[in-house]
Image (tube, rainbow, N blue to C red; front, side, top):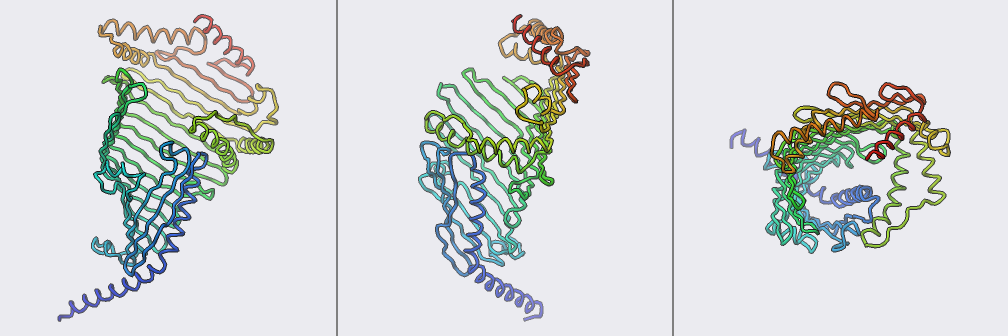
Length: 498
C-alpha cells in the first residue's frame, strides 16, 4: 500500500473513531438537551397564546436511544375555543429520527464536515386531527424538516410543506408547497429565516351562497431577529408577494394586486421601543381595469416597554373570557376593571405618556394615471398634570404636537370616478369623462366651500398644526376652542345641507 493510501486510510479510521465516540456521548446527552428545548418552546408558545382562549403545549412522548441514532416522538396539544367547536382539543404528532454527532452520516455524504451534536429529521404523523391534511397530500407527511443542533446549542435547518390538493362540495385548496430555511443561536436569542411559496389558491362559498376565491403567487418571507431583554423579538421582517387575485361577492368582483411588499423593523434602547412598517403595492386592478399604486408607512418611538407590557397583559386577561363567550355563542360579558386594576392601568398609562411617545402615519398615498393623493400625520404625546381634567384641557396637555397634511389630487379623483363609472356599466367615453369631472369638482367645491381645505393648482389641500396650545389651520391661527367651534359649525352646515 502506497504512502498516500495509508495516510487516507488513517484519516478515515480517525474520523470513524471520533464519530463513534461522539455518537455514544451524544446519545447519553440527548434527552436533557431535548427536554430543555421543549421547555423553551413551551415558554414561547405560552407567550404567543396570551390573550386568547386557548393553550398549546409540546411534550416528549418517547425517546428510543441507540449508539448512532435515536427516535423521538413528540405531541403538540391544543385546548380552547380558539381552535373551533369541531375540534377544541387538537393534537399534532411528530416523529423525529435523530442522527448522533459529531459527524452524522447525512452530513458526511453532503460534504458538511463541521461537527454537530445531532441532526434531526422530523415529520408530521397521521392522526384524527391531521387525517384530512394527509389525504390532501396523497397520504405522505405534509410537513417535514431537518434541524442541525450544534454543540453551542445553535440550530439550523429547513422546514418543508408539501403540495396539497383538496376539494369538497363547497371549497377547494391548491397549494404548491413551501420551504423555509432557518438559523438560530442558542436558546433562540438570534434567529434568521428565509422562505418561499410558489402559489396558493383557495375557493369557497359563504353562508349566503356568494363565491369567494383567493390566489397568491410568489410569496417570499425573510426575518432577521434578536430577542430583547424583555422577552420579545426585535429586528427586521420582509414579506413580498408577486401577484394576488381575489374574487368575491354575488357579482364576482375581481381585485388584483401586483408587487406587494411589507417591511418592518423594530429596536429597543433602554426601556423604550421604536418601530416602523412600510407597505407598497406596485399595481392595483379592479374588474380588469388599472386603478394605480399605493403606499403606507407607519412609525412609533419612545414607547415605554415595561408599562406597555403591563397594559397589554391586562387587556389580554380581560379579553380572554370575552373571546371564550363569543366562541361558545354565549352573551359577551361586560368589560369591567376592579379598583386595583383601574389603579394599575392609570399608573401605567401615565408611565407611557411620561416617555413622550410619538405615533406617525408618515405616508399614506394612492397614485393613479393622472394624479396622486397623500396624507401624513405626526402626534407627540405627553403626560398631563391629571387625568381628571375637563376633556378639552386634558387633550391640550396630552397632545404636545399634532401635524397633519392632506392633499387630494383632482385628477386622481377623476381617475377613480371614471373607473367606478366603467365598472357600473357606463361605456360612452363622453359620459365617463363628464361623471369623472363632476366628481372631482364636487369634492373640491365642498372642501373649499366649507373652508376645510384650500385649492392649490389641481390639489385640494388641508393642513393642521398644533403646538403650545395654538392651532394653525390652513394658514389661520386660532385657539383650540376656536378650532373646535369652527370645525363643528362647518360639519353641521354640511350635514344640514345634505
